[in-house]
Length: 435
Image (cartoon, rainbow, N blue to C red; front, side, top):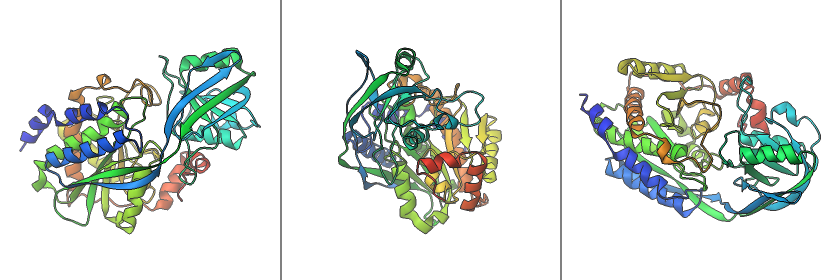
């Protein structure tokens, strides 16, 4: 009965797939590397015993990086363009907006080049996403946007701008390291600076990888991740580890397939890093059949810390299922009931589908090494992947149990929760408000 636990704790399948993904190099949305990751993941799911492994392609707005720089006085400051920044050159007075809180943008920034931090103060009640800060700057009339890391180490951060309706952003946007950001603020605050971005935005193709286990039921549990990554790094934590977890859980579930009362479908989404495009495509493809999705286990940020962190979006039965598994294994997990509208579960949660965002506990606020050159595999441990795979395999079996009822939510209640958590205003600014 428990042989699968030992098999999972000694398995090399998930970790080997993680190595396969990071060794591809560039897995940027629409790139040949993303396609290679799709094919490798499809083949890995097939090898572990999942059936009907396939790729469902879709067209996207592509984006390819060129050279970028910030010019200040007679200096050239290192930076990287934020994906889906428009190409162009913008000059203006440099204005330091500190953390870039909502109230910091309550001024006329016409023609200014604004610099903001990647984080928020510890006392602040919510994290403010990069795109929210960007579109506050756009609304206030800024000419360019400079996103300064709060993590030391000469690590300029990346992360996309743009909206679903306008995939290429409005003003040039770059990321700079903590050190460059501090230099700009100290030496050039109030002076004229120039942001210069070169890039291309061709048409491109991405896709979602699917496979299945369990009985052929109308109802299904989805185990998901995203397999694209930013072009500046290996994308080990974000999100090679999540896709490796899907493969490892599929391997373990293949040995327990007769325990599944409900079909389990594995979906590794493309194009997450440019606005949840792959998961939006899948949610729209399902249409009314979203009602048949019993629950979603979305892996994005697993393995970065040893303790699983499951955001439950206010679904009490999801919290109960996680606690049941934690007690069964006498193993800590943390659950958070709030809304988290920033990964591939969200296009489903917005329609009332119960879903976990599965990450892991780690120190500090924000992404840490994520979205930088430092998102590399040696910061992760294979034992953590294996331990978490055991818990997530059991959780998936628990969710698939016919006796485990998980009611869907009224989307109006999801909207009300976002309002109560002070997240609605920012989502409206970024074009992400679906209600």
